[in-house]
Each structure stands twice: as structure tokens, then as C-alpha cells.
Length: 216
Image (tube, rainbow, N blue to C red):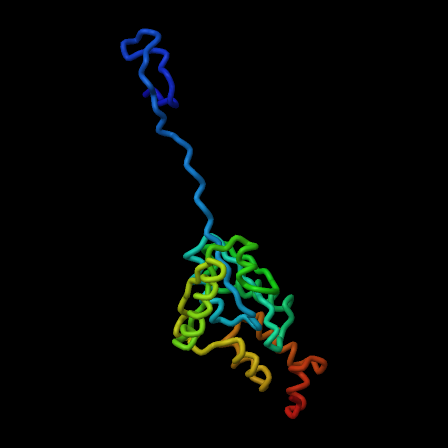
């Protein structure tokens, strides 16, 4: 079967004579490249929890690429450094469930989240919801981000088993000397290994607190 050529004049007409004037239109026009939908999943992740991993796994089915962005919160006393959080997060992603789907990279940043979103070309901010309390506070933040930066927020509800899991809860449990068995139901293995190391380090505030509970 004769292939179809691009738009132009067929040198041979339908009658077989040269000089025909039948325009031939191609059916193989190049397709435009599909735009990539990149989202950022932001938080302090100090430390990352299984609830975070759950939200991330669900988000991977919705976007082409996700940047897990670890932000600096000056209002919180950090348990882990930014570099330690990034390392634990990469380990949690590599070994966690739901490893198929969107590509993920981990980055750290300081400053406004919306500025970071512009810098990486994000089309949306991912936020996890555990309960109605989260919804109230996150909705206000989402409206503000849309108003000042024109970026949408996508809410993802975590699994019910993570409804009351938070990084602040993990820090409190670690400070009170929670066992690895207790922590393992809330955080990935890389995190409770790191917490155990902090608890054993007398130079770290967490280790000092466990040795002297009167320290504020």
C-alpha cells in the first residue's frame, strides 16, 4: 500500500499523468510533547514517619515527578539536622511500600515554600491530611498560597492507621525513652536506628535528657 506523504502536489495525478494537482495530507503529524506535572511534598520531616511515606505512595499515582522538600522551620527545635533528615528520607523512600509511580527526589530549602515551588517549576503542593483538625489549618494555608502565588494544593488523606502519627509525637516519644519496638510502628527502620543513636549519645540533647529528666 502506497504511503501517504506530507501536504504538497502529487507529481502524478489520479489519471496517471504527470502534473496532477491533488493535494496529499499526511496522517503522521508529530505529536506535541506531554507536559510534565511536577509537585512538591513539603514539611520539616523531623523525622519522616510512616504516615508521610503513606501519603507519598498515594501521591506517586497522581504526578509525573515529586520533589520531597525538607524545609527549615525556625520555630521548631530540630531533633535532626537537615542533612540527616534528607538521608533518612531517601532511605525510607527506597525501602518503603509503593515504590512505583512518579520519580522522587529529595531536596532541602530555606525560605518561603511558594518561592521554592516556583524555583523547581511545581504545579501543585502536596499536603497530607490525618483528621479534621489538619483540614482546617491546611485549608487556610492552601488559600493563602493560591492567593499570593497562584499555586494549587492537593490534599491526600493518609491511611486510617496513621491518623494520629506525627513527627512531634515521635520526638516526644524519643525524649521519653520509647523503645525501638514502640517506635517501629510509627517510623521507617532508618529513623528508629537514627533515634537509637541519638539516645545513646550523651553529647546530644536527646541523650542528655534521657540521663537527666530535669533538663528543660
